[in-house]
Image (tube, rainbow, N blue to C red; front, side, top):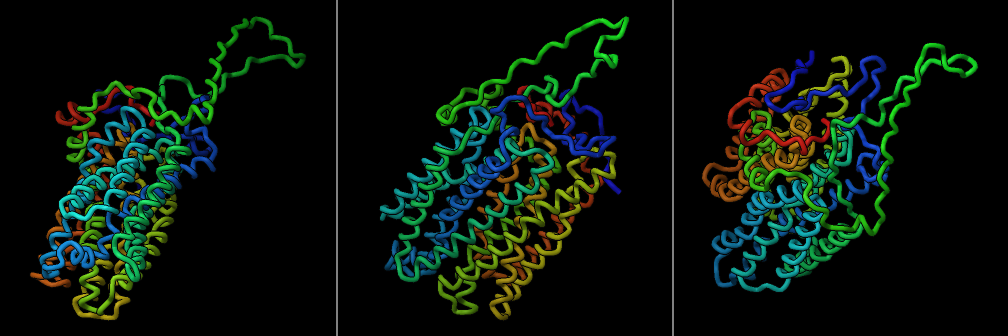
Length: 539
């Protein structure tokens, strides 16, 4: 059974099908390229697959490096606290130093209310370059900063610069890849989103064995500089204006009937078809290095700034934000006290705790095919059985895996630490939780991007911004919560919340399409969310 697909037009947005498209030809069952590529060699959809995957690799590398320094140094929070407050007890100084990381997490999310409208208005490339320049400057500043206040300000600036890559990555992937390819590539993004945290904790734990915690910032500065140079010299602009009213390059004119001798048949008139305009010239490498190319839409920055606040009330977007919160948000809860937990339960030192995150990296990598290829395969299976019509909800049944692994992961972690079971028990929990991040967050994010593709930037901002605020609150209250009720009760409650949120894929699968269309007509949505025609991308 598959969810019903509406073919009506929605509200006052003529041509806005909200993700319901024909993906397979009705007669041949062949995949139809969505969006339809133009005849412009500068169209990202016309670039070679190798170049597209190079861009995806740069995007993933940028994500990894952003979280490497944003969350990785938490593994050395005790050493950092002793350095800044040598005369204070660790219980007090660690709480003060924790503001370095909570403030970064908060600004990573809220800073995108600046970056995303700019990326939509002026392009992805200038925002990547400027944000990474800010990130690099902040990282170098923190190498030399010795004052607590100055270091806190530097971490806030670091959060502002590093947060852009997290939200721009899904927009960039949607710019470059076709609808039927998007799920698999987005799985790489969500995998590296979680791998960045685990990789940072692992490497930073090894660094502090024989070095000061400040070497973490020196190492990270070198990695950020590398990505910054790659962005400047090899990362092109991926935003491309599309005119949906132009005929696709794949449309063929019906040939005129001719005799076997090649002569025109009697009684037929000659009506030469107008020749299409020649394609524009391909930009040179030097031209592709231009950072600014002017405005891409007539929409105001103010409207794009407020649109995510309207989007979050849409059921599908709110659900995707909640899924992000109960996966990535709960990983924030784990990492905010993982060093303390493993130290108290097993006597682990910082580098040993870091090695436990090998399981997190493995779980994230295993989640790539489970969240990408499996999600695409499930969606395609339903598409074939629905006469070639694709609905965004068709990938949701793949969420069943994370419905099992997410609560299981949180229970294993909570029980393992509380009962001091073998260290492999909570470590397996870390692996399963990071598997769920890659699998569940990819499916739900691709789901809402497919549904509202022309405003993918604002949709991503609404989802990830909500997640960042939730993670910020968890980073503050996890330790007091655990201290009051214990690991078993705290993480058992998180497991129940996660299961309840993930279970909502079932009603959304059956009623999500009608909900999207009904809510699209709400007065709040029509006044603050509907987009202008120059935002259309052919989906």
